[in-house]
Image 1: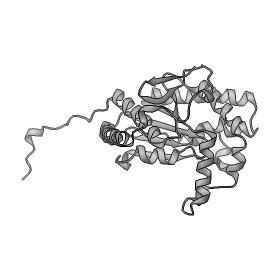
Image 2: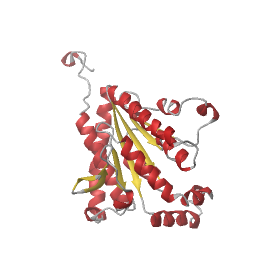
Image 3: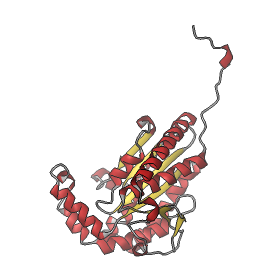
Image 4: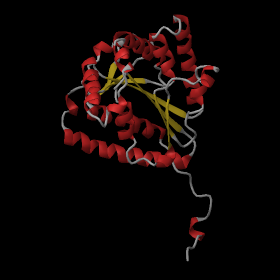
Length: 274
């Protein structure tokens, strides 16, 4: 069974090759995140730390960090990414959003379009949806056979291993909301003219496949969570709790990476500015 990373965060680490049920994880999270002012104050601290680490990462130019976000419709990927990167220098961040593949992309292997967007040295890369769409949407809609998605799990593990061997730290987040919360968010989009552009009638058809998506996510996360490239299930009904949980994990990962700006290659004392 997946287990919590600590007593103070609702994030749930998916243990490699360990079956689990998303239904056993409460999308509402838990009590430590019920105080708005306390959470907002903590987020300010984390955002400052993230900004400082990102500056060092960029200056060091040796390592990179890839953050993968997956969620069911209305799961909150856009808001999560926006809030996480508040105050971070955009020059050191690369964000890629993967939608339905183009005809050119379909003429290549499913990872071809993904590899082109992995972060370069010194950068933080963010995937808003990702290569996992090819074992989720394609599976739920019957576009691939069981043998194919099982094979793709293996391909994904090898792909992510390649990234880590070349200096890219990989963290993967599944934003977990309840079906009831999704209904509220879809209705809010319909009710608000300024948000209505986010709503598509096709969202309702996808909602009818809720149970199939839950199974697909459960199996994909269990099959592709590794010690080097872990999956975290983030209870995401509460947006503030969601944001803090993710920021805690990202900052902790950067602390472990410990990026350091390079030392001066010249005699500092000899430099005189007149």
